[in-house]
Length: 332
Image: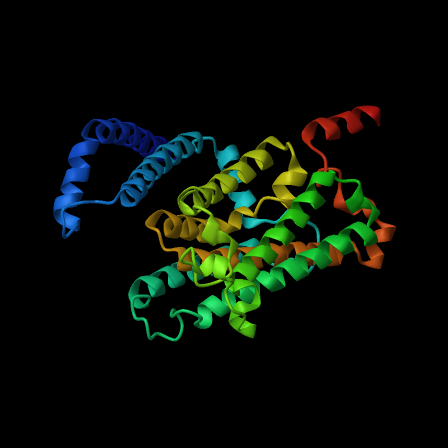
């Protein structure tokens, strides 16, 4: 089994390196082939070229990374530790959901939404995917609820549990930043209430060709659509790496999404690279909901009265990195 993993990993590494060299050398020929086969006017727009390049390099990088992981997986102990990170949640709390069902559920949802969007989004009369349809409205509602629930969770964590306040302050700062981001996203989806209350768009915006009151009308969202989703699989790899190294565990466990979100993260990455902004918004709202619900359950458990009698139950590893733990052990 170990030899099989090593051989498969070596093949993936060689394939990734060969693909990078070939794409670099024959990039112009590949683009010309795509123009002849996939474009009616035999011309690909620069924005499409960017999507193709990002998708190609991302796939080659993932192939190379997968190969390196399989080579490292020859170490059974290391491989068992990696698998345990995906199937267990280190945060304490009897109410926390098991990572395995969450992994399956989130992956199935991401796949189903992607397939549904590919099949039915072109139908402008589809009640789910049309403008101001069910999914777009649900996206705004979810993001607003996420902002409220996460804000309440942070207040409970800070006010109800002294152990939470001993953790790095940047954890709470990151949560408040996410509250702001979720709220802004919800308001943008609702055009800051314009779609609900029927406010008129100011003449300054209509003269510039904008129909609605939205901040993103003044921004170039290409980088958001094509680069930010790629960071989600990177965040998963970072979370696994920090868990393996036992460093910055407060950041890995409390700020980064749990690694069981890998399926949904890849679906979001795919939507961003392909250039499906509506699907991207829907999947991001679902990811935020899973993320906030986990933090909410953690905050609810750690503000319970019984935790005040046993604060050590959380353990030093929750908020401390490996160096701090070793220092505490030496002092004992």
